[in-house]
Image (spheres, one colour):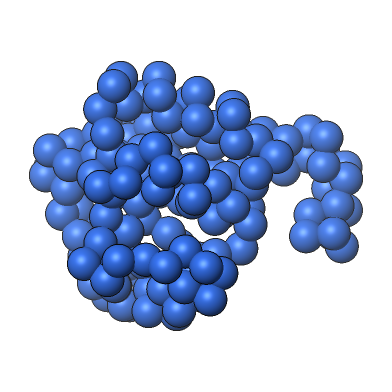
Length: 140
């Protein structure tokens, strides 16, 4: 097992210790983590957002990690609130960000009223890859 830490891949997520029920039905007596990551490479990519309960903390994390740099990409894994509730804030702060996600997520985001510019979206499917410079991710 490779346990080497890559300093270009940074955690940006937040811990929510005040949440009693995840998705209003699953008990989480020890809280929950909202996982979001940033890949800092030739292109900067933010992987997922967080629940709106932790928006301000997450934005502070992003600002610290990005050090004034605008993200080039926002990768949206799926559109449940724990991963996607803060998408609008990314689009407002960095309107030139490109979104990488699935066709189904694009449909849902447009149904939610985002009115995404098709030229700002890169749809991916199972097995696709995306290179950000030295880092390439695979979509599964």
